[in-house]
Image 1 (cartoon, rainbow, N blue to C red):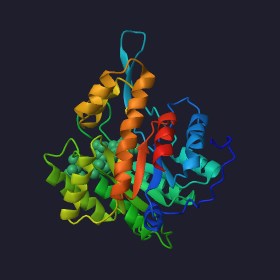
Image 2: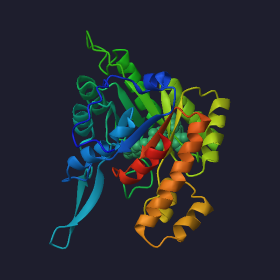
Image 3: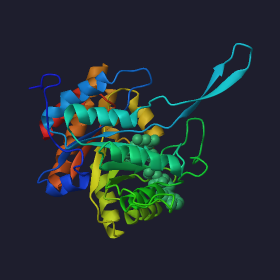
Length: 332
Ligand code: FAD
């Protein structure tokens, strides 16, 4: 039964760290990721998504961070004007608003792209003052239109450096070594891992080498990129363990939801979609049928991962709940 809007009070403390939830849990946790609405959009849609999923008792909710993008506008005099825009602003305020409304711990994402180290420090201070004890630390993708990731001058080049800065603040070390009586934060840090390797890496071994650096810098757990073949996840976990990475590795799952996903996902995320799944989508006549195929496939994946004993099942919702509800009802 769906909980009436706004009536769910979970009373979980925002200070509850992801790693502690994992350690306490006897069965895999249910967790999901939301995207801030496009600029001008409503936060109510996110509230509705969470409200639709609260009955499955999510342990925490992630909120993505979106770097600025470059857009060109016609000025009217024949010339184009370049503008820097952030299409999905509001990660920190949305995270805070979600926690205040639902009392479910929120994990805001923080990226290297677009931030100097000073700005990162200020964002960490905001998060600490707002009562967050969790962060997913990422590098971020290249800005649209650019081929390679370009850090801000004076910003971090890779996620391991961001992890180090967070860990330093956890020790009360700020960028200015002359600051006295500093407040130590207490962030639990997650990082990203890639069962089909990150697209910039020459091979899986190199990618896992750098993943280990993030863990050595202080990351408490890993969340994976989406995958549609569990064998890829099992193999990745095995390789990580062989390399000496001991932290929990949380699988990330996304149900196929549109015809376009079959073309877009491999291009955007450099991951394979199994032939059987492509064929099932190919038989569909309507968008609803595609969503149902996505639900069936992801539910099967999730149930196998649950039997395998994963620490949590993390769903990329794209802020839509109908398909995740159907999956969660079968798995949790
Ligand atoms: P890194 O760990 O820096 O790795 C990037 C590449 O560099 C890899 O090939 C790695 O092998 C290599 N590498 C790593 N460290 C070093 C080093 N020190 N020296 C040399 N090479 C190195 N993007 C967003 O913009 N916002 C989000 O909210 C967001 N959320 C995400 C959530 C999840 C679960 C995942 C899996 C990805 C998310 N992303 C997000 C996308 C992510 O930012 C991109 O995949 C990005 O290209 C890489 O980020 P990373 O943190 O893995 O980078």
